[in-house]
Length: 121
Length: 114
Image (cartoon, rainbow over all chains, first blue to last red; front, side):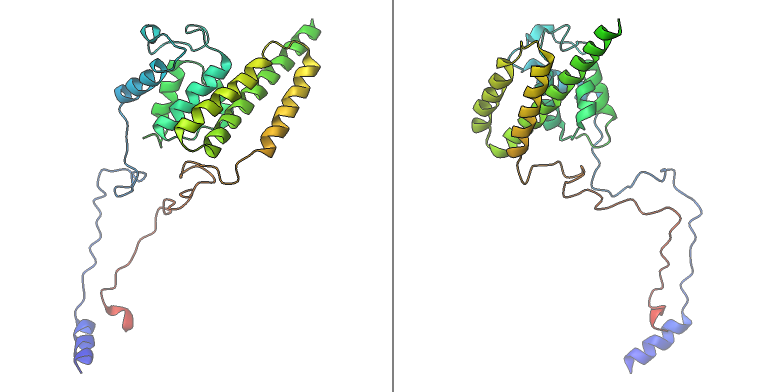
C-alpha cells in the first residue's frame, strides 16, 4: 500500500535535471578523487636524489652537486651507475624500463626523469 | 676505418648488455633475498663476479661470457618478482583506467521502476 502511494507520488514529482554548464576550471585529466595525488616538488626531488648519491659508499659526498656526471665527475663505474639507478628506483617507488635506465648517466638526468615521471612519489 | 667503428659498436652493444644483465641480476638478488641484511652480502658477491671479468679484451670471449651470464640469470629468475604496482605485471596495472570522456550518468532518483 505504502509502496503504491510512494510510486504514485514519485510518478508526479519530477526532479529537475540541472545541467551544470559551468565546467569547473579543472581540466579533464585531473581526477580529483584519484588515489594518486603525490606531486613532488622539484626541490624535494633534488634533495632526495642527492642524498642517495651522497650515501653511496664509493662516492665522496662533498663533490656531489646536481649537475654531476656519475662516471666522468665522480669516477664511478658503469655498474655503479646501475646500482645508483636501482637505489633511485627504490626511493621513488618507480619502475624504470631497462633501456631508459641505461641512459641515465648524471644527476641532472636522474632529477629530470624523476620529476617528469607521473608516478613518482 | 669501418673495422674500428664496427668493433667499437660491438663493444658498446656488449657493454649495454652487461649493464642490463647486472641490473636484472641485482633485482633478482633483491627478490630472492628480501631482507636487506641478506641482500647486501649477496649483492657484493654478484658485483665481485662481474668485476672479476672486467678486463677481458677478446670480443668473442666477452660474447660467450655474456651468453653464459644470461643463461645463468634465466635459470635463477624469481618466479614472483616484486614489481611496482602500477607497472606492467604489477597488481594495480590498468586497474582503474580513466573513463572515456563524454560519458554522463543519468540519475533517475527512483523512477527506474516505472
